[in-house]
Length: 315
Ligand code: F6P
Picture 1 (cartoon, rainbow, N blue to C red):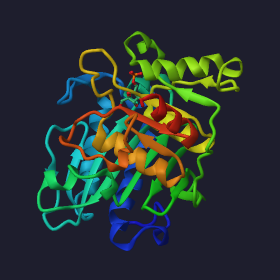
Picture 2: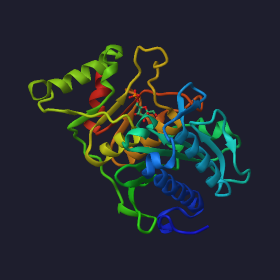
Picture 3: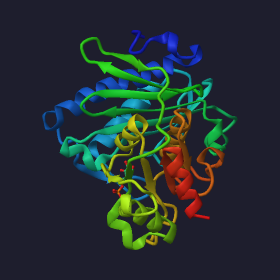
Picture 4: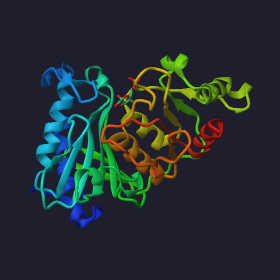
């Protein structure tokens, strides 16, 4: 396999083929995304995933590309948002990899940042035991953001590193060895169109932010909502802030919208490793265990002062 799409010395030895496959595939995907409509109808609806979410052509394409590329790289179990069941890629593999191969699909056709999220565990005896375990058992997590730059944030449990793709050489170049999320925040993110469905603590937090300087917070807070978890996470890791996708009163949103195994847990790992916090409103995400592969979890993360305040409001 041609090396390196990333400097191998920064990756634990056993994981190099797998991480290299992730990087090489994301570089190909980034080329397709950059061509947009010239590469086909990437945002066209092509079906539904197991949970009734609409699948776009690029969701399915990305899933097929990662699945194919990860064969023979040490991945025993492959779980994807786009597939109902876990696949066994390599019986002798050491790892279990879960992914949202293309996050933020509503932004495909509008040239806004979208991404890939992945979470890696040591494989256990069977697929369920590999993925349905405490988030703290993850040994690696990361995202790739396809935006003005293609970049990757990744953690192996000792800090969160940031790489930017150098398009001239096709290599992810390290730009930060240890990202540090500011403790205080000036921005918050929540889908405000759901306001009438929110719980009281969530409403109280947002109203506190809206009162800004004139309220108990004593400072103004800016509001941001991109609609791509990867873009939102990257902004928050870079300059602080909070993100909330809480449970709300809509049918089907009892546990929010985001998936524990391949969205919430990996982002929580990256955020914690950068000095931030991630909870379901009450408990740290890293202490939680998924009971089903595609289950949803309320998700609150970001600057520690803000996440603590949200937890306080939840009592
Ligand atoms: O994967 C789900 C996702 O697209 C996230 O990337 C994003 O944060 C969220 O859903 C957007 O939700 P909504 O459609 O409610 O704005």
